[in-house]
Image 1 (cartoon, rainbow, N blue to C red):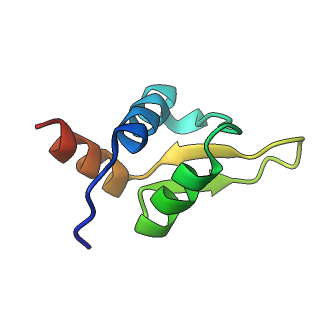
Image 2: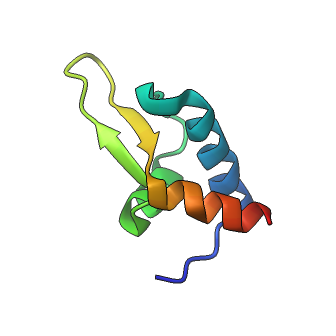
Length: 69
């Protein structure tokens, strides 16, 4: 799927990439997350605690690298 990343999406993917496999909480960007999840760039991990954690997928990392090139 050809998908053009916005500045907000690039920023969020960078943050998730920096968080590594543990992911991170992202309560402030639900619309950006929904779009990235539909594209397959981000996965949600249900923690069972108060909030879910989000992690960048391999496809998301490739998209981020392409956007930064």
